[in-house]
Image (tube, rainbow, N blue to C red):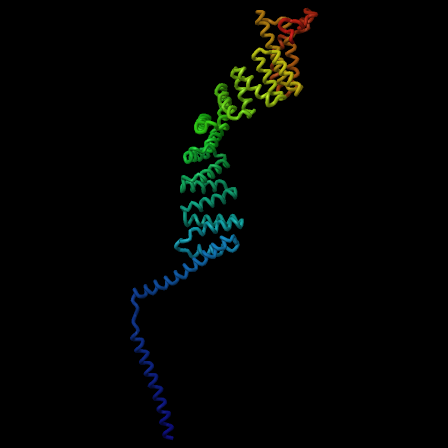
Length: 422
């Protein structure tokens, strides 16, 4: 019994001693742990931040790689989630191109709104990124937001003032808005960037015409011809310019250069002949009209032009012959009838001059009546009606009346020294 009591007592004592030893060790252990300094805490935080940055950068690389691979393979529906993750995690801005690729991805997916949003985000992050401004401009133009597109390309040319392609795009946008003054400024810049580009100069010339600045347009055309003497388009435009100025000689000189370079250009040859006609160079006009006749022998307009030249040259029978040839092609062609009437009037002038008369005699009046018949026929042609009516009215006072016929019974033009051919 004593042994049992001793054993139980020993066990209790041992348990108490163990608790005392454990408490002592715990106390001693706690008392011996060193306290961290602020510098040590900061270093621990730095190391942890570095570890987190390393993980983040690795995630950026992984997402960039996956996004680029899908983009390269044109699997656009799988691209966006990776590039958005890059935008979220790339705090260093190492992958600036992500906005370009993501915007283009949405564009390829026909999600213009999303593409625009991405480009605008990219511009906010990188305001000097020309590519983003340019891409946004294209998106805005495709969406017909012309004013906004203009602002984008105006920024582009500020960032890259020597970019011809961007100036061209900006100029075309100005033209869509009919802002000719700004379009002119854009093309002036383009001619500075590429002085030998004749397309720029020709466009500039056309724009000057739109604004009514004829002096600037003339100088622009002259500059083109100076750089390219064989530029038939601009030579022709110069001819037209001087034609509008009623400077027949200069107009003819430019048309003649075009004809020399392009002998088969019948339209310009016609303009040249008309300028010779207007300038009183009738033989030169006849030469050009005869060349036209070789190409178009049955053209009533050309045949009538030749008739009119012969009227001016005094070859009145030839004039009527060519006019009648024109009427064989078109019996109602008014200008041909007018040409015959003019030949008859010219015959009266010559006969009166030859005989020293200033007033019309009966035979003169008979010729005027023949001219009146032709003018009446010309009235049937709407294109000639006004002129025919004016000519008819002008000879009304000298046409024979009933009394003239009564006083000159039996008289006719047959055998008349001046008018027998009529």
